[in-house]
Image (cartoon, rainbow, N blue to C red; front, side, top):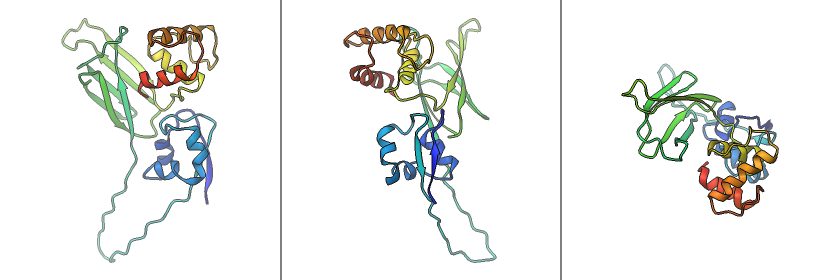
Length: 218
């Protein structure tokens, strides 16, 4: 029997699907009962906390197999894809830099690509990751940066908190993720608008939201 799931901070459709035993999040996301939810959350990787998604019944698969024999079954376990683009304060890509990404018990130690990008499959239930980046691994005195990555916590750019998170990550200080369009946030918006040839008014208007979505590549 279908039931409701209340979206929490850190949820995405992949993590919800994994929680309830679905191999593909599309089975839930594209269900007709979730048509309005899908319109309210057009990006399955960025869900608004507090929303309600209907979890449909799972379809059982039946197989006829001989007894007194060993049979192998492959179960598809969903994975969440983490994409990061690393840049310095001037906006230049941190290309070909050694990094270590720790997510739960998984450790990925490689180098960024020529554009400073990282793309990894991670467990869908993950909520926190730790990233360490070496600016020059051959120089012991070179800078090493370490920061936490909140997985699944980014709200859509249409919300104030979602816009603040993107602005902060792009180098525009909002004074924290308050969820309030205060003076500090408006100054950050103005800085972003001025740098992207938008009308500088400090408002989170449609043009600014669309530009944030494009620039942030979420």
